Length: 216
Image 1 (cartoon, rainbow, N blue to C red):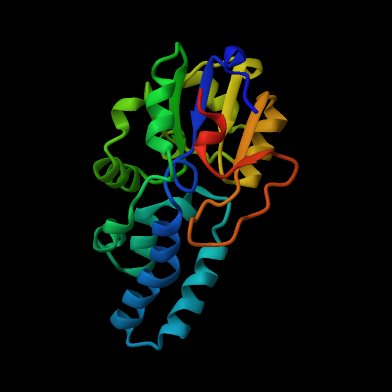
Image 2 (cartoon, rainbow, N blue to C red):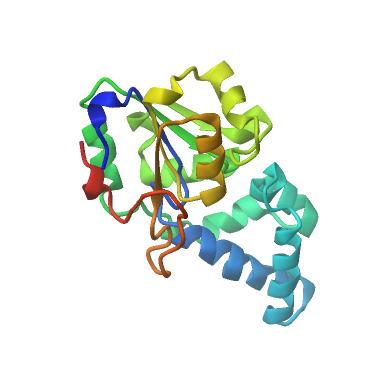
């Protein structure tokens, strides 16, 4: 599925790609609504419907991923609430083995995530994989999320790469489409970002279920 001899740069997403999306789904769909319901004395379903509506209004923007934005919007310390559920943070099957295997080759390995800096720090603390990358890039530092046209050009300015020799693995279909439009040659999706949920659609892009399928 991947001809590693042709790949010079590997861009890897975090949530749903290297990390099981179960933590994020549980947090945003259940844990935060529950805490919101408790804070504002609301039935859980009403609180959840309110939050889902607020989430939807920001899809595709940096705010959608921003811990500080939602903390302000809900008047709650979202970063602290994430700590309550941090025991669910976990690598996807064979992700660690894959990263260690990549380190044996002369590839540039970069984590590129839309996650907020506080979320990135929490997940690196729990997974202990930061040292396996040449660089960690948070799109909040660039001011533009990966799915927005223009992101990859902005990334070029801080992390130069040759699209013809670059592999991106990401669980988001809009992000894969954005990368394809920019000309990144090698693109892979993730068929089951949340290991406790059903597989998701990856459109025209090939997808892997396990990193064993592309182990170098």
